[in-house]
Length: 228
Image (cartoon, rainbow, N blue to C red; front, side, top):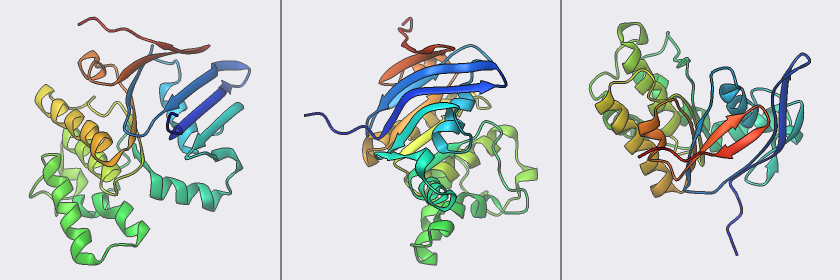
């Protein structure tokens, strides 16, 4: 008997006005599984991630995380689900400019409020080291490059060891060596902590490392074989 899916999408549909962005999306993501999602620009990959996270409302269909229908949650319940179970790497970073790098990364842990300050600080330092930002914790975001800001966003998404990782172009601003390191970290998180990981990417080298690659189309998701 197979384990229950961590993430289930059934018939997910989103429109802008009368124009469908995508329709009839069905997807199951298992704990520990890494899935790459590719597709043409404008097909709605980022919108799909936002619908999964409850940041955007689909026009039809259902999103379930841990068996819970996201649309049926109250806003406080949805916020708690995002805080405790989700790690979201935004394409636009959404790093808070008034906080230091370390405080940006530690934010999910502070919101959870379950760790004592010494353990929180140690977890934050370790996470910064894993993304190659060791020693930059006291810096402000305005002093960082785009690639460094991307790594801050990734560290923040992973520091609380979420069950579901949604990553929107996580390597888009990174050089090849750093991109490889970040993919190692995402895959390690999935394998070690049993997290499901859905990665939107245009980078075929990264997509090849996923357990499965899917192509998002206006009428569904299709398995995608990638050239070696």
